[in-house]
Image (cartoon, rainbow, N blue to C red; front, side):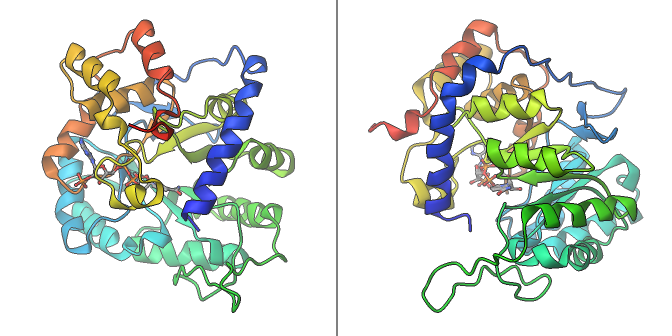
Length: 339
Ligand SMILES: NC(=O)c1ccc[n+]([C@@H]2O[C@H](COP(=O)([O-])OP(=O)(O)OC[C@H]3O[C@@H](n4cnc5c(N)ncnc54)[C@H](OP(=O)(O)O)[C@@H]3O)[C@@H](O)[C@H]2O)c1
């Protein structure tokens, strides 16, 4: 589903919505609070707290997961960002079980997110239980609808996005997003999930979700970074008490998939980002993550390198000035320009 076409569509829609900026004003900033000895966190509308920096595990090689997760926990990460579609929940679960057993960390100190895949919209309960079983935990801190589309069911946990005979994605038109959302709400009543949210929802779908939700989405996880800022969507969510989590915070930061999708340059190589990073004595990655935090978004960078785990977590000890935030703001959509 996360193919080139759908991503480009999100981008086009976001560009159109930039015109809405004017009327979305006065958003109160989310405060990143730090309990003694804990990672800074944001308060969600559900009443629970989500650490402001999480570790994304998408495309993490299975054999490396145990070592990476344990290193991350030692560094201070308390937020793990998973999905059924990443096909590595079982390896994450083994790493977690060992971390709890060896008292590296307690379950109650962790914030664990996973996501419902498109082909499981008609099987929310079974899919959630399957993820819990693989992750070897008895509740999720956050369960997200991965994409606002239901595709043909291919068996719980298989996370295929089946193509029809015509080569077109086999979308199940019998399940509405509202039906899916009410099934998500049921998980909260059952105590299987503490907070529920959405992912890759634009303003219109988010607005609809707010209208039909009995439990409001606590989070909208969307792609946003200096080259794709989506200010209107971010501010719309924040205005309505939905925390925005920024996935893919370093577009093309060595990520082959994104390079293939967009064939464009990384904002980590952007001359403005690089010169600001130098000014603050930080790396471009740290500057980009800090920029995300100062926009009141939660960031979930993925790395398979231990030294980068440390680097990506050291983003709480400096502040980008308002003037420099403006310099980054005008880099929006730069990746679309020929370099
Ligand atoms: N909801 C959704 O639809 C959705 C979509 C995409 C992603 N996500 C979530 O967001 C997480 C992050 O997104 P992502 O993995 O696509 O991309 P990302 O975190 O923006 O970028 C990851 C890439 O950046 C490199 N990198 C990491 N730290 C770096 C640093 N300090 N300096 C330079 N390069 C660095 C990594 O390489 P190395 O591994 O070699 O360090 C990797 O190639 C995912 O793991 C997933 O949990 C969600």
